[in-house]
Length: 88
Ligand SMILES: [Zn+2]
Image 1 (cartoon, rainbow, N blue to C red):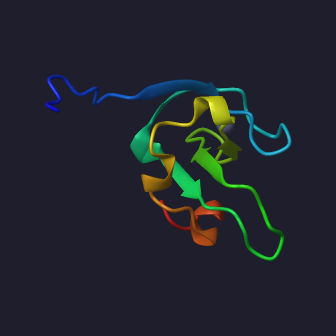
Image 2 (cartoon, helix red, strand yellow):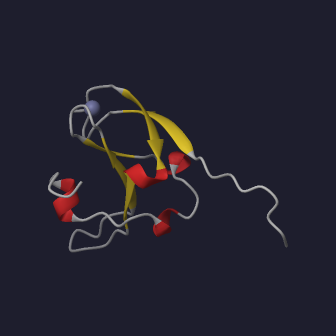
């Protein structure tokens, strides 16, 4: 199969809701490169998550499953350093 036109610009409009509603409510245009993927597991057996960080307030927001981009597991992996804001 030949791909004749590949959609390259995936942009999601999403509010900054933060974790537990601590976000600032900014409406953001989020690109793939803004997202981090967490594969789940760990000692708390967490669910997988796709997360972005708000540039206004620094809070991280998890996307609902309906908002995940394709091939979410190919996104840059989330790290604890990134979640702590140490790794832009
Ligand atoms: Zn915010």
